[in-house]
Length: 114
Length: 114
Image 1 (cartoon, rainbow over the protein chains, first blue to last red):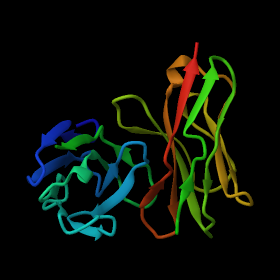
Image 2 (image 1 turned 90 degrees about the vertical axis):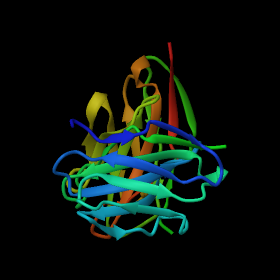
Image 3 (image 1 turned 135 degrees about the horizontal axis):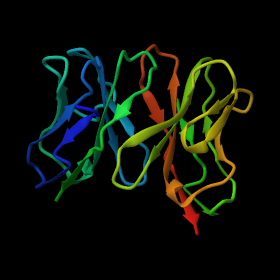
Image 4 (image 1 turned 180 degrees about the vertical axis):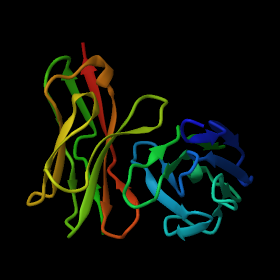
């Protein structure tokens, strides 16, 4: 596609449930990033993939959060036992190489945990 | 700790007036600096970036920013704003580390008043 695509655009889930958020990066982009943007805050880094491997997952808040990118393109962010504090917009970005070139962001998935 | 500070959470300005959005970052030997814009219900879009060279950087939509190493600042300016500039603006920094782990500020909401 022309840009980074994230699905769903909105997700409402009950506390304790499991959710998956999907990111389709720009074709050919090897680097992929996940960020979380809480209300009134700037985006916070979660995890970075170079190809299929997670090069840096230091931003994942706890072991309920996990992300995969099995074929080096589409990535899925998985959240287990969701909590109300997980409510935020989850942003995905991709870039051509990951060496400080421009990152292109998707429109995000707004997750609401009730 | 690496940080980016945007002191102004909201900036109201009349149409056709000049505007400056402030950004300061914690000092580091090597930084790369970015400004992103987020229009309502849209993803982040890169306005401009400083990687090296001239400290005055020009971006899209008539915006420019100046890198000031001694003051660790990267303020965003526009000589005459338009209604369509109403959006949230995020300053972002990559600290030396080899790949694009971006640290964002908390954002400044620019409200252009007709």
